[in-house]
Image 1 (cartoon, each protein chain N blue to C red):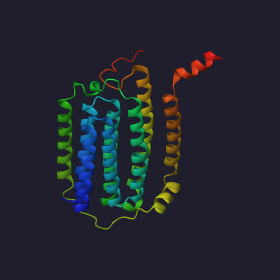
Image 2: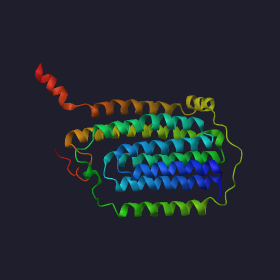
Image 3: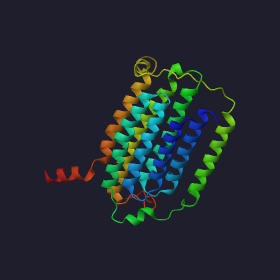
Image 4: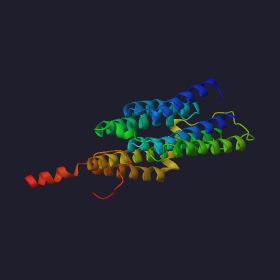
Length: 171
Length: 103
């Protein structure tokens, strides 16, 4: 329980909690980026540098920017409606607190007796690349296929379906 | 408290924040972001168990985290384009108003 862990955990918690509680949606995405950067720094502190940089590239660089674009494209004409009272407004935080209580109880009662390994494991980029090309080559191919399908599917879903018929009508 | 339980508690807290956001927020984009936060909490668990687990040289936790990040990226892309298509159809992203599947 070092000071750096506490600092990074505070950054992550503040960022994500602000992302889930702020009213302005663009502020939410900016706070989310802060929380994800804190999480990436936690990965690096744990010795997984490659996963930390992947987290920054994928989440801060792509997912948060994509969410910001979609928020700006779907800016509602009536912003007060997005904060209307819902059926889960009272029970949602209660459910979350209960889930956290159960998980924290399981963590504290389950891991206290385990020995702690002090030696930091080796997880260099070269080792990860070798493992991806040897032991995990089939999951790598499947992920490539999944990403291609997601790319094509997202493009088709986001395409304006009326535009094609208009062009055809003009011809 | 051992370092592992610290990371696990942080991960549980992140999961709870994501769950509370996904349940209470009424904007579809923020619900998606809450789901992403829950996935990130799982990734933190993978990395923490890899770091403090018995066989870190097998790199299993790192591989799980990398593949999980890729799947989450694909999910975010498809989910956001679905939100865009729904918005183009019904002119709102408020989930309370999206209560009909028929055009």
